[in-house]
Image (cartoon, rainbow, N blue to C red; front, side):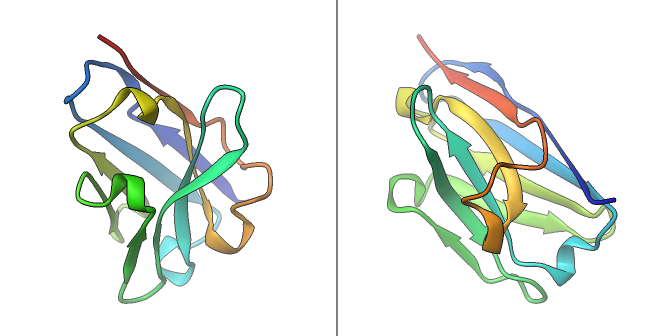
Length: 117
């Protein structure tokens, strides 16, 4: 059974940083295109960042370019999202998912990120 477990969220002030982690079980992250998506209060799922399988080319939505970095630790089968210079509008529940299913309900519970002064 495929499981994705997100962690690392929390409450942070504007300008702060958080690093999210997504531990996968039941499949090998490196073999799949993976993404981080988020759901802001009252909004639909929004694609944030993606990493291709294998060599891991990365992609970002414009609003997070230069602030967020997606990475992967193959030994730990874990996907990360380093988030710097957080803004109030980054407040959301963050999920990791296979890129080709990012519009579908996420598998995991997600991790809450709240940016507030």
